Image (cartoon, rainbow, N blue to C red):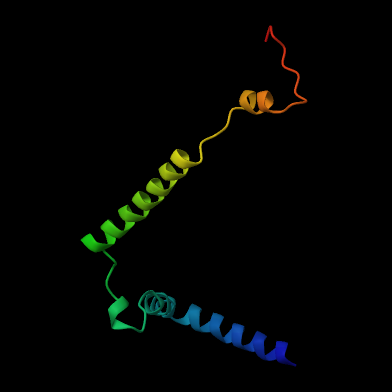
Length: 92
């Protein structure tokens, strides 16, 4: 039974579109604007927004460089020389 009502609604909408195609334009343009007047204009970032964006990169790079400085990578050769059971070839 509900599918009959849905079919009738779709058919009524289709007939209305054939009768006046401007109804589609009215629907599309009404969906383009939000209900809040503060969101009607396009967004343009302020200086504060750009500085905050740049600061996130700066904070990440600072943390990354500190990580590299205080927790350096260890060479596999050094690890092998520290292990007592490691056999190191002299010609290598």
